[in-house]
Length: 176
Image 1: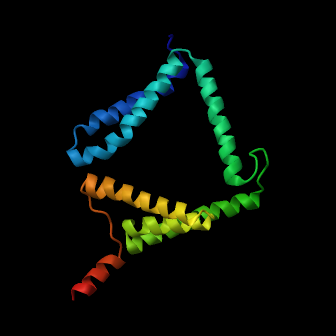
Image 2: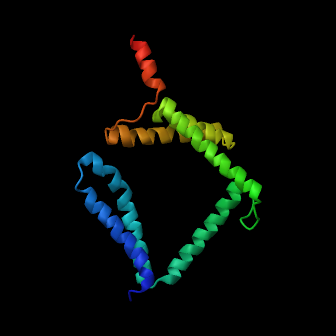
Image 3: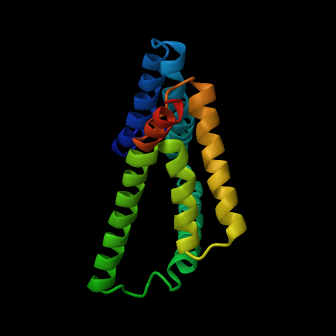
């Protein structure tokens, strides 16, 4: 277990997430919840990675990297419909880039107009159906994502979630 220069990067992440956790405990309960939920798993993973590198278990790390590369290739074949070794021409890359920008813009407009709790299921359902997923999977993902966000933010942290422009107008119209 000899400390070498290559271990500094992993040590940086261990210390970084430890600092985030330490600083988070100085916040009020609701304010520290999200940083802790994110930082604690990241700290554990970075500590594990630092241990693997420091212990000199490079064989285990290389085996882990090989498994990750194999999974990446399998996912790439499924999502792209071809192997990673096939080159994608510049026109296709540009088209995909603008597709991503379009979907981000649609999501932002939905959030701005109808708020998070309506935009999330509508966007998720539309995106998955556009990508030719089944209705069942699309609906379950939309419902699950919305429920998870509602439970985490509205109930868990008792936070206000942006309602958009339309919802307050409808509420005011119904009250008058």
